[in-house]
Image (cartoon, rainbow, N blue to C red; front, side, top):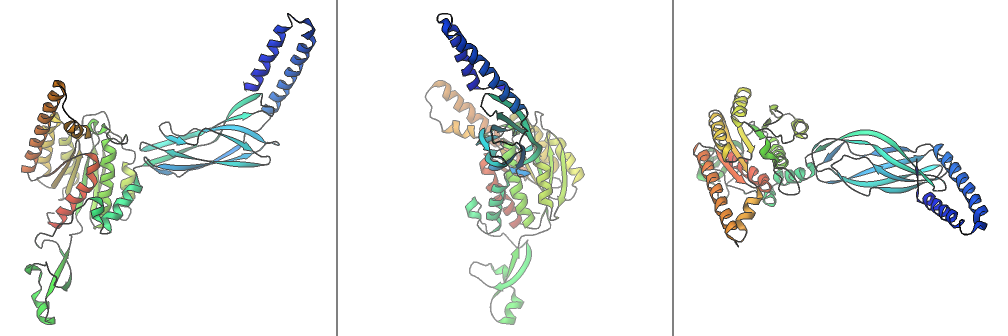
Amino acid sequence: MTPRRPLLLALGTWTALGLACAWLPALLPLWQGAGLLLAGLATADLWLLRATPVPALRREVARILPQGLWCDVRLALTNRASRPLRLDLHDLHPDDAATQGLPATLWLPAPGGATLCYRLRAPSRGVRQFAGCDLRLHSRLGLWGRRRRSGPVEQIRVYPSFAEIRHHRLLATSDHLAGLGVRRQRRRGAGAEFHQLREYRRGDTLRQIDWKATSRVRKLIAREYQDERDQRLVFLLDCGRRMRHRDRAGHAHLDEALNAMLLLAYVAMHQGDAVGLLAYGGEARWMPPRRAPDTARRLLQMVFDLQPSLAVADPLAAAQMLLQRQPRRALVVLLTNSRDEDHPELLRAVQVLRRQHLVLVADLRETVLDTALAAPLGSAAEALRFHALHGYLEDRRQHHERLAHLGVRVLDLRPEQLPPALLNAYSSIKRAALL
């Protein structure tokens, strides 16, 4: 129970009247009467508020929310008192979430109720909790307020932004890849699976002509190929301290890598390939390659609460573990953010993997590096920083060249460039029938 502003103002006025009685004794009876009246009203108002039942509250919110997107939350309150209620409300949402529409003040008729809708945005993935709802009930005369808690304690899951992933997946699977920045490339050779026969078209190679079918129908017939199916794609995901770096919209590099990984996983499953995952550098998680209909759901459930740790990732140990668990040849996509001191371990890990697998390394770099390179030079300190940055990037380029000499495909890019780059690399590998 807490006194509210009207009661404090009334007490202040009554105190001022008492001070005035020192100079005007005739006001003493008025002061005494006002005190008795104020005490009676405050006591009665307090007693009625204590007897007022707490409104019932029901929360309507999706059990799975997308990371970084605004979502609606609906609170339905039912008045169980015999009189209308005025109350202040604040939902005890997850601590790191942003809201629009809270706190709020509501009138609840008697009998009846009211509904409040507000918006919530969860910036990070994982399991989050609503710890109930804080209510402050106003007394009938407005002299007192009583704080109570109502509503259920509920848990929700915050997944990577699957709405954006779904949009990119539709682009990637509906022949609109140009909208995502993915390039179409002509197939090299005939190493892919046969799909069907069709009439010869301008641009087809002589190797595609089926001469037996041509002789039967007396016109040029060409073979049409499709990308090979029933292959395996395994993601080797770095969850170490390097992936904690945040670039745009407060997203860590691990968040960006997960979004790109899920997008490529959807596309690969649409192509008929099996998809697996090995996370290292923090909590180790393993999902063997599978092509079942629920693979996308299982993968999403496995990674939605992955967070970058403070540990130093060991790519060599992860590579050795992957070889033990996945002996059959696969395309291994290694998603990481490497620095100078990480290069020797990463090089040895790739040497181990390439004995059995085709390896693609996606090495993320910080956006601030490109920004610093483009900044004008106005002082000696800025010039020194510019040359130091050039030296760092040159060492990074040489490291990537050493990886490329081992037959590894390397992507050196900013996080926002990762989704189309991964799709381009995957498409290129499929069309070249390298698996």
